[in-house]
Amino acid sequence: MKKQLLKRTSIMALAILSAWSITGCDNDDSTPEEPAIEVDFALSTVSGAWPDLTTYIQGVESLDFSTIGNDNAIELTGSASTVSYDGSVYATPFGAPANLVKYSMNAEGVPEEAERIVVPGANTFSTMYFKSETEAYATVAGGISKLIVFNPSTMRITGEVNLSSVTRRVSGITRTYYLDMVERDNQLFMGVHYENNFTPANDSAYVAVIDLNANVGEKVIADGRTGMVFGGQGPNAGIVKAANGDIYVQGLGTLNDGGNSPSGVLRIEAGSSDFDEDYFFNLVEATGNISYGIYRTSGGRSFTAKVEDAADFWEFMTGEPQFTYYEIDLSAKTSLGAVPGLPTTYGSRRMIIHELEDSNLLFSIATNDENAVYKFDINTNTSDKLFVSTGGYVTGIENLK
Image 1 (spheres, rainbow, N blue to C red):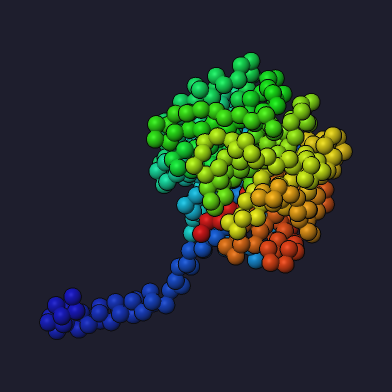
Image 2: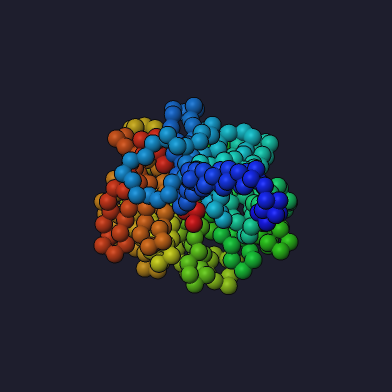
């Protein structure tokens, strides 16, 4: 371009070139675009009074702060918890029809809705298992209950698992819930809870074994030593898998509903798809009361939450939090006591245990005084308050890296 203009030996051309050069320098001096914010975590909180609840979701670069509000959060109507997969956040607001909302973080670190899946006839998505970028499984409950197959990339339902063998397993039931899932050897182990007019159908714990090659339920296994596999995500998970492949199933038990089975842990050994008859961990005897949920770290430590006053399990009667985080030893079948330094928390406001990259743990705490997240040092067995949420109780801590 320059050579062609110079060949014309035109003063006007030189003037134009000079002007063009000056303009180019001005453009070089312009303010560069700010680099995209690297969001490492997504936080979700819930605020309001039932039934007018709002979920707030936001991205943060790190957890290096002492207080956080909702100033940079987006709003989602209803109470929702979150899970993450492959850098995206999936929210599950409660309320018909059931919605699964996928969020991606924009350059400013603000969540933007990418797609959503809607299942009419159900109230909420219960639990999910992500097999790959294009295949995942999710259960819905409240109204109809089923297990769908969907593509996380496109957020389109691609199928439904045949659960006819599961629904026929117990007669005289009015509701069936599918809660928590663990995959092993291309089989999906899914907790099942049968109800008759909001009461457990019996004292047993049930797990459905699903063939992921055919997407069909193979069988339902049952054990009467505990009951009510009714966990969700976080420390309230009902099923965890150890490094050696053993699967542990936590049952809430039915003592709180007039039944006879205590809170406990069952085992499905590696290579088997049946409950181990020689293993049972009675959590009521170990912790001293009804216990809810199970969480297993990458280092092999396990946790549950013990209710302090079983008469106020739902935390309506006293208006006080009732759940204390406990560490348990699944091999020795013993309790190691309450996690040091953690206040008793509201179980009804979500209980979260989150493992960081350095293997230290985060515990969500909700009391009448504050909503906070504590950090537990696995080397010193001590807890310190990491941050306080002024925007509601914490329902999700997701690592997006």
